[in-house]
Length: 352
Image (cartoon, rainbow, N blue to C red; front, side):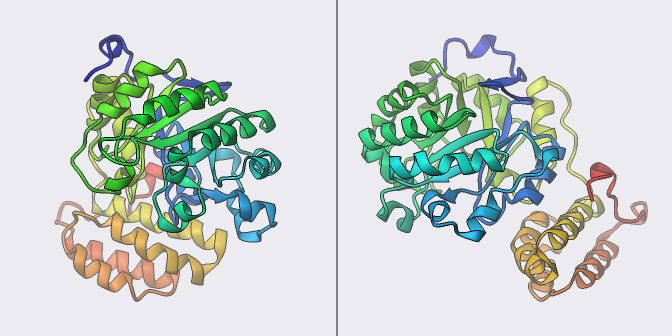
């Protein structure tokens, strides 16, 4: 199924959401434990047009939870930033959305797609798709209280046979949502199933506001293919960019019809990982940063030679010095004779 206007679309045309310009039309999707402001900045410098923060509970904000408040912190260099909130109480949404705006959010996004059981049990995330009246009220409450655009992220229904998501998207648009992100998977599929972007195209055809497509963009050429096949106005990339902040620059080139730059070589790739760790140490301290970096390092070496050995060693590191030594040893072990330059940080020069 293809939108009738998809063939005429300028694939790299910037997306406007209210006063926010998303250029290129590529969005870093929110990922718990990953899209803190360090990784957001890496992806913004890597070519993302908009970056999304980890989702934050409006209940926690209402209670003044310090960790949740810190998650709202934004660096000027990473703008534009979308701050994703989750919850089920319109009154609480109305009372807390201003905190995200005051912290620096350029866009406030409402999560109606998370299928984690504890989120669903509280009536939030994807559970809201089964309560369209509450979903619309929650959106309207955010719109009424926010001075920045409000967007909503949904899935393609609760099950693969559920088509109610199209009508829900219309109701969210009528409630004031400035854009809708659609993940093609239904809640019942979680992270399984072969890519089927047809639900995104259905929502594109039904709405007047911009639609952002999401799901299984893992190759740079997937971005223009999604735009052509669905007519969506932008592409959200989440797991496809895990450990690959440069992926956005590659996808942007693909959207423009230009040659796609190759992945950094092993020295460049691990150089970015080291920079990531250095920035995270400055942000949260060495002990916590090294603990968080273990999962990230697993992704940075995905597909590289001797990745299993690297991951095993990475699980034991506790200091930045140990990480630097591990990276230099790993690079030296597998580098060919002609690739004998020091770790390359030029792609992200000036970011530290």
